[in-house]
Amino acid sequence: MTEKYRIECIPNVSSADPDVLDKICAAIHAVPEVDLRFVDPGLSANRTVFTYIGPAEAVFEATQRLIETALACIDMRKHSGVHPRMGAIDVCPFVLLDDKKFQAAFLNAVDRFIEHMGTKGLPIYTYEYSARQPSRRNLAVVRKGEYEQLPSRFAQGDFPDVGPKIWNVATAKSGATAMGARPLMVAFNVNLSGGTKNELLLAAKKIAGRIRERDGGLAGVKSIGWYIPDLDVVQVSCNLTKPLETGVCHVFHTVQLEAEALGYSAPDSELIGCIPESQFKQCTASSLGLGRFKPMSSERLLPF
Image (cartoon, rainbow, N blue to C red; front, side, top):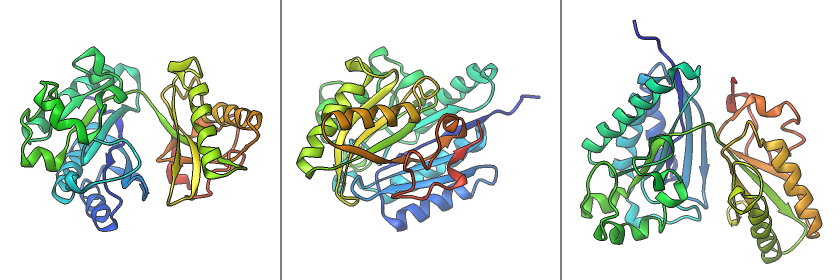
């Protein structure tokens, strides 16, 4: 008998429309073994992050239902938002939650699911562990030019790894999806204060450049500086791709020091989606100022 193992899926869907989100939630809830932990919409991004966990096969079933529902509801030809995106289901990562002995089975299962969704008409660029081209491991490379550049990418032969390779009415409506298995990641934003919007935005971009790994900063940190209109806040927005090495506590403290050096402050922060409870060994949600925009509920803590 094959042992079951648990995985997490964190699809980012290009809509914050409550009616669309209700339909997607219903699609996920239709799979009994799947635990939908959090739904995190962003109005300015016009984007929503779903986080759910469960046995692998159940999670794949819920994900297919989510994708089919999102494709029926979202038209990328009409989409706009502040966050980079290239499709109705912009990015769809899977994370192994159980023992590493399941890693090979997990990676093979993700590959099979990617192939299956390609047969359903979804253009998929594979990334991270599932990347079929080494250059596509990095999401930023996969999503270069965003949705608007997809027609020229298709025309130049920069095709998805799986699914349709023709730009037509269907692919223009759906856009493309980045899909793959990846390690644990935490999406964490630090809010800046103490200046005008333009001053803070300049500071946020400068701090983001100092802390991101590729520019010699913190291990596993990808970061940008941006302004979120619906929240009226400037943020240093971070993806922590090695959270066990560089966690939220260290990132928050580092941004605070960088902000103070520029004459500003970083009073609080924002978590997107869920977070492993182990991230709070050296600090608390309160000390990070979490909860200003969204409540920090127990459902957002993953049990590892």
